[in-house]
Length: 522
Image (cartoon, rainbow, N blue to C red):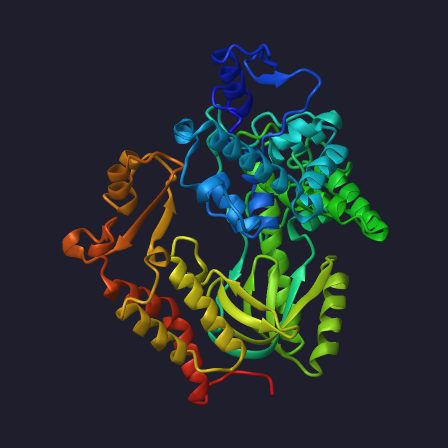
C-alpha cells in the first residue's frame, strides 16, 4: 500500500527490481509516464483506503495512518512480518527465505484487505463505475470530483463561466456559511428524540432547483417568483423556473434508483448512490472542480439553514423543547404524547416545507456538553459519542481506553470515579504499559514548515520525519519542553491532568443530576 505516484508506485518499483535482477519486466509506461501492465487492471489499495468514504464512512476512522501495518492491525487484527519491525527499506537485510516470508505476508495482507467485509470495499468500487460511466481503475484512483465531472460531462453540461471565482480560483464572494448549529441546552436528558432531514443538501437542491446553470439564468431575470428571498440569502440571486438543472435532475434520478436498489436488497449499490447523492454539493465550493460554482454551494447551505429554522418553529409550536440542532438534525425533548407528536412533526415538515424527515434515534439518556459534543445511550443500548476529547486519535491509547470505560460506566449507571481513581493509581505505581502512553500524530506537513515550535515541529525534526509520517512522544513538564521521546522523562502528572480534563465537563453534568438539576420529560 504505497502511493501510485509514478516514481514510487508498486509497478514502478516492480519494474526497477526486474531490471536490476535481469528479469524481463511486464511493466509498460503510458505516454504520461504512468506504469501499467498490458491487459491487466492495476488497483492501488493505498488510493482506495485513503478515500474519506472508506476511511471515515465505512471504517469510522479505525486506522490512524495509511501504512499497511496500521491499516491491517486496525481492520484485520494482524500485521506485517515480525510485527512490522522490518521496513521495506531494510528487507534486504533479511535472509532470502525471510524475504520471501516478508513479501508473501505483505501480499496476503493486501489481498485480505481487498476482501474485508465480504469484499464490500471492492464491490463498492465496482458499483461506482456503473453509476458514473468511469472504469474501475479510474474510480479507484480518483475521487468524488472526478466522478461528478464525468456525470455532468455525459449530460453534455456546460461548465459555468466563472462560478464566482476569479482566474486564480479565488472566491469572489465572501466565504459562504456552512450548516446552522443551534446553541445547545447543556445537561443530562432522558428519552430525547433525534430527527434528521433525509439527505438535506440534496433535498434542497432538488426542491429549489439549485444548479450551476439555473442560478441567475438569463431567462428568469425579471420573474419575481424566481427571486431568492433575502431571508434565505441576501445577494440578489434568482433561480430558473423554466428548466430543471443538471444537478437536481441527476440527484432525483440517483434517489429514485436508490429506492429501487433498496427494494432489490442491493446494499452496496445503495451505499454508492448515497455517497454520490450526499457528497455532490460540496464540490461546487472547490475551485478545482470543473463545474465549480460558489453560488450553488452557498445557496444550498443557506437553504439548509432556512430548513432547520423552519423545523425549529414547527417543533416549538408543537410543545417540544429544542435541546440542540446541527445542520440537518434536531434533538427534541418533551411534547405531549411524545411518540405520536414525533409522527405529527414529521408529517408537518413534509406538508409545510416539502422535505422528508426521519426519526433517526431516541436516547434513553444523553449528556449534551456543548456545540457538537455529546455522548449517550440509545434505547437499543448503543453508546453514541460525538466529538468528545476522549475519543480523538491524537490522544494516548490509555486516554481512549479510559474514556471508553467511562462511557461503559455511564451506560451501566455506575459511578465513573471508581475506575478513574483506579486508573490514576495504576499510572502512579507504573502498572500502565508505556506503549499506551505514547502520543501519535500524523504530520500534515514537513516539520520545518510549522510556523510555531509545537510538538509536531520539535519531535518531527528530532526524528527526521516528513509530511505523512507518524511521530510519537511522551508528555513531560514545560522545563523540558513539554514533550520528549525518552520514556524516562515522561511526567505522569501531565497524563493525570489530561485524563481529568477529558472527563471534566461530563463529570460536571453527571454531578448536576445528583444535585437535582437533571432535565427530563418525566
